[in-house]
Length: 190
Image (cartoon, rainbow, N blue to C red):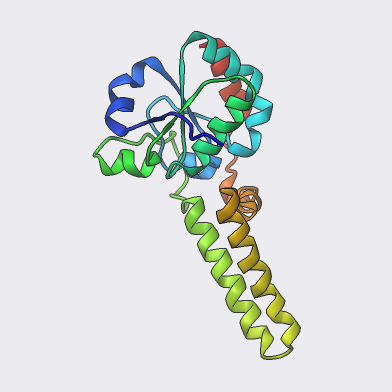
């Protein structure tokens, strides 16, 4: 498996006006701050957006962004599998903000939502502790902790995360203002 093309913060900043930026985080994460002009197409909706992304790619370069770069690299691989060339932002929005660049927020956006990696760490830790605590009542409950540990190992080995996919569907990660159809229309019309 090849590593997708990656742009560092300086390269992306200097070319931002020439790039179509696709943010693959959840709508809640996107609302808490995104690159200027970025369109929100959550990773779990990427396949639905392929025709519009292909159309946008025929007119210019695509930059895919997430919080740290892991999800955007996965998105770039998916796009490459469908013949669409795209670059990932090295370090994601976290590195963008750390370099002092502004993050935009939609008008009337909700309070900040934790990044998906942080949500996964909280959920995994809570489930492990629950399994260990309930294991004092009955040893079979320790299987909860073992299952989470196995899931984390699988997640690391495959660079995917099933728990993130589940957490991404929770209401606080899907605010009412998020509209995939609007993002798709913007991609098609660019």
